[in-house]
Image (cartoon, rainbow, N blue to C red; front, side, top):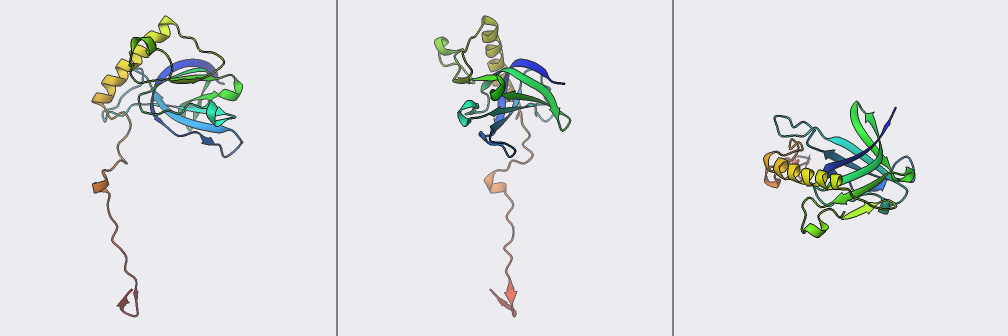
Length: 173
């Protein structure tokens, strides 16, 4: 079965919202983590996938940068391919809010950059969670890569393939 949850987490990576293959809905996939997630010896965090669905593109979170904080309400917890996955469906009462990775002024420290839902409220406890996640994100990102760098290359390090020259009748073409 699935469990209904509310959570705050740090966005590590996100796709851009797009139409699903199976319906007319839109979907966005995010890799999220918090201080309870383990970080391995390579500095890679054991993230959780968050999948968000909506009828309209504008109802989905568009993460602008790694380190943003997302608040999700009324999401379902399940597994996909043996890994924990959280699903938030805006068609069925889920909501979200995105906060900047750091605050720029005390007056807007806990005001979301953008959100989806009927209304938006924050408590002192929510503010403490956001402040704590910002601190964790700041120190963790300085010390660890957080995501695997196995397939990342500097442009100068990309292997070049030799150009195959077809020969026809012994002449190079």
